[in-house]
Length: 200
Figure (cartoon, rainbow, N blue to C red):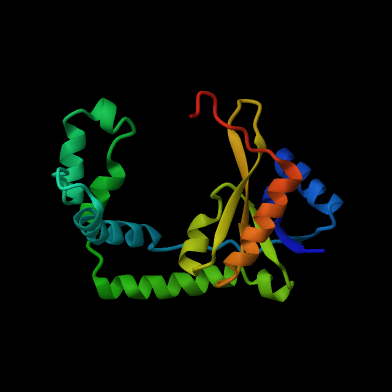
């Protein structure tokens, strides 16, 4: 059977726990892990600086010529024309992009440091000989991003409110094929995904 690492602090979630029981019934081994809590200092600067530099390139190379927005500042100005419709939750994240003064050299240092921190966080993949680590929704997506570890999210069920909840498989670099196979097997085992109403 496959070996899956599970964070002790999320094992209390009832839907997640039910899912772990299903995986065990199918022959999977569940290994509880408790990595030391670590922060990701500077992570927002990565998002800010990359958005500032990559958005103009993306628009230039992929947007229709009719699109007049060319930068983050343009997005902010566009949203201000109708904030209730275009930015109902505010624009703080966008505003902070312009305020971030991290240089490219400083950014590379942050990326290198965070990669080391995040790979240490997921060290159980190797030390416990795991096929994947299991998480809920995007709870550990920032760690995956800076560690450069692939992750795949598959529907796991629904809360009483109707809100969907998903199981996330986290693997090692260059093991995307294994994650896809694990995800497909889990999807066939559970069939939790429901087509949204009125979806065409």
